Length: 296
Ligand code: BT5
Image (cartoon, rainbow, N blue to C red; front, top):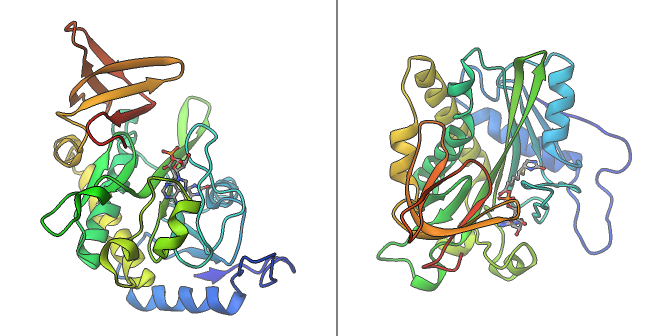
């Protein structure tokens, strides 16, 4: 595990935003190492005080032959991204911003489930470490699920997001990078600067969460689920169970197309099946599905 030293840009103060020093990043790397119980995932880990996007660094490393399970973690991203050219924002030193490198030797129809697999691994880790109820919103959002302790107004807010990018060689999948951003210790008053729907573990629980423990738990979950994927266990049933979207009235968008209807199920490829009032079933492969009931 290494903290990559990258020129003078690190550790300086930029405007009012506090940047993270090498020493702080090194401290986080050491704490992760001391609680990590995986055999592959995270055994190679680069912790950067600051970078553009961890997915880009992971892609660069993949091109240099980095092995499966390599993790890139950053304390700050200057060009963090979501899907469809959207931005991913995070106050420095408060979140988990990471990319996981996979080199799947799996048929494509199984490898395409790695995004869902990582989202479920992250949701489980948050539940275990922070005691929150976490649901998944199709296709890739982790949201706070309503519980007896949860004030209604906060339910459905976004805790984390997942962005997958792939590298192909000829007609073969060479690598797959799953980027995960989790709002861990973002103070309530900073959430509005991220997105109107954003929430954090701190805002939900009132407690600071140890990011090293959360990451180590997440990586162990990923490793175990990935091993099970190789044994033929299909994540679809569990994913469907965890998706708050299924059974809800949704407004879905894919490019310029908008569909209103009931999200009935996900098919074996992960596509969302939406039945309109006219009884037509639309298959949504990519895009967004806003829950009509929550306005999220
Ligand atoms: C996602 O996209 O949710 C995927 C986010 C993946 C971020 C990770 S961080 C590590 C790795 N490196 C990267 O560069 N990216 C990955 P999407 O579903 O398109 O959601 C993006 C939208 O979420 C934005 O348009 C905002 O509205 C909102 N948003 C931005 N930052 C947020 C935050 N911290 N918390 C909640 N919502 C946020």
